[in-house]
Length: 267
Image (cartoon, rainbow, N blue to C red; front, side):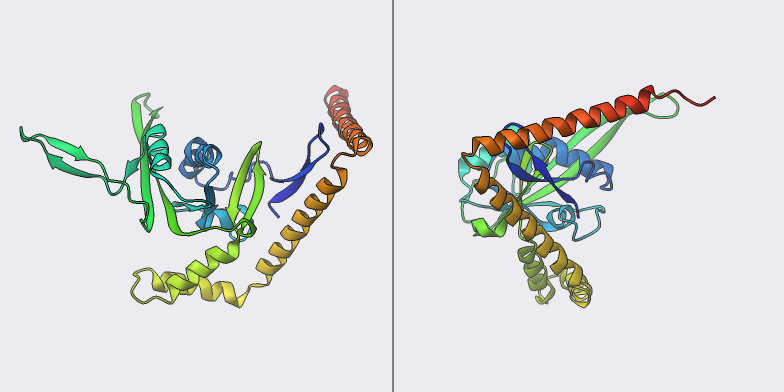
């Protein structure tokens, strides 16, 4: 399980949080793209919900291995203002942007005209990172990621799972929806990816028990968090008691490591 309980020492409220270093097994460029761009996007616009392969891997349903695109779903309508804010703030490239020629024969960029009824919006980002090679020569490493914002349907509140990544609220789509889309692709012979998704879904169906066990455990944790938070709402005595337990735990941990580091070494 990639998710643990976390308690606020001031309010006494519980929340679910991803384990530390959960992205360590993700390839370096994808991890950097997530921390540098994807996480801030999810934070600055609460309409976004993380979907696709990464959402499954964060929930522990698939190995944390290399990923292709970053996928977003929507809780509310994606507006032209949203589009311009995310594109301009993060300096993203839109796959629908084109090029033309001005009156002097110079090539110019022709920006895509926003359409709220698009099936999806597809952005990409390229950036450079300088690095010295073994000979001390400066090299520019070009890094790249692609992201899709799907506009097929507005996600319902009950289809969203909220887990904290450090101090950031991360909204993920319920995995059943991701798997249902994969099955749709698998059964559509018009798609060039049909066979790939067919193989994935056949493998999943043959051994779906871990999926059900993980989802059951996750929703038991969500129920426990909700019950705890409802019970302590407005109960000052319980909040003070929990706060005392948290402070005591933190103090004991500090004392434990202090003794470990100050313990005389054997000669």
